[in-house]
Image 1: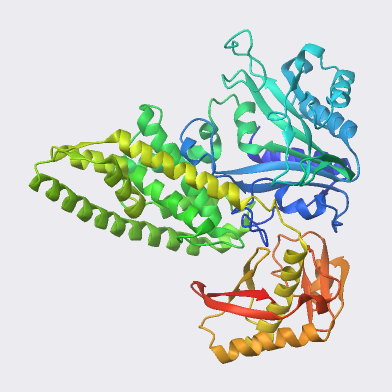
Image 2: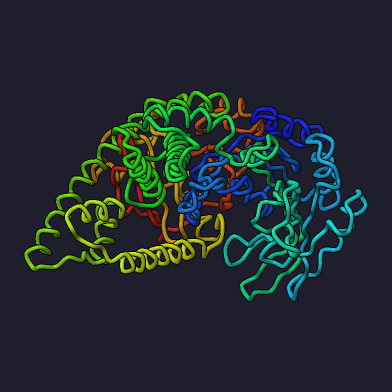
Length: 593
């Protein structure tokens, strides 16, 4: 079974069960400051899982492009990827555990042809917060899964959420396939990393809300959220030992072999470098080519993109590849994935140019690092020292992106030893600080819908229309990020906006607020929305039915929410900064006072 076959088999199955097929959302979350990328199929649906009405109904299915970079240092083994695709189906207050489990079983046994004996199931064992999930276990037993194939596991294994400190959460039931290999021990069970049990699917039952006090209370409306990774499932179905042995990666690896004049599967160190390059180029291609695509920078998602590209260059140098090489590999990604994700084709030249620019920029940075290293070694020699401290080696890595392996190799050639233990300590401290910063960014929870962020989100609609009124209809939203303190809005415009024009935009927004206009919502087809002059990107990414929010007679925009009922409650709108975001894109920061 290949990627296309699994993709459409899954979608068609759930369409027969009354689900509407919705498109994959952008990799860059809109109006969500808590995460840098879309990490799962449920991520763009959080407002609807929290109670918003979805225009396509209560049963949904899709494939979703996702990025997770928490395990970026693990990429290079057989299974870890930064970019992957997730199949998912959802019930928004409709069916619950019984139907979700029955359909999971039906798809696994009748469509993917696994036998009940091959399947192992995990369910939540219960604790002080929520009871043992005997209900899910009972449904699996009724379907023919034997009791010894049903495993009760604690919250760390069989519980999802909340995404932040508070919010929707609940037990899950995970499905594993016994691969047939010998168990590593008598205690070996689903969740063990030895490879005997392969996790293929996860049904999450969101039935609780975690409150600030730490108490778990039942949700008024319970939801189902499921997920199946396409790459890992196809690899398992094809009997492959690694996701990198499946077709998309085979073609990418062929190109890397030609560019580097090496062979895959002959040397483990070479294989790791090839896998890292294959994964990172694929991910960078999708980030830059996204409908809300970003470019390398020193902040947020742009920094992650820069790090991916620089890791590619580092491992490319290990394979003696000539810079720039990434755009050549990216062309294979666009050719393979462009049919499913047409935005890659539309943005192809932009992707190739940005990759080349960043590679060449990093080449220059490496030269600066090399110059700095030469100065350090000269100074050490003058003082008859032969050990380069770990702190200095880490500074070269952190400031110049100069790989530790390069420092070690070059210093070794000059007769210097490196304090590797000191470098590792500095590196571990850096990783820990990065993790803490990431945890801090999740404090508000996924897709914060507090009163403050709702007011600021509504203000972005006013700003968008004011920009189009003052600057012209060429203005289109390119990105939005909202925290409880401020809004950030990116839009197309070629030039810096002078202070007088900014004052006009600010005044126009405040005039509307003073008019105390009502906010109304209609559900309509995308064609109706176009015909009514609604602001939207109008790409192929919209559902057939969309929500259109109108602010009096001033603004009409396709959006998922949330919004205030009357803009009179927004207060005073103030632009705090206007700057360049990228070529042809400006950025405005603003607050409500």
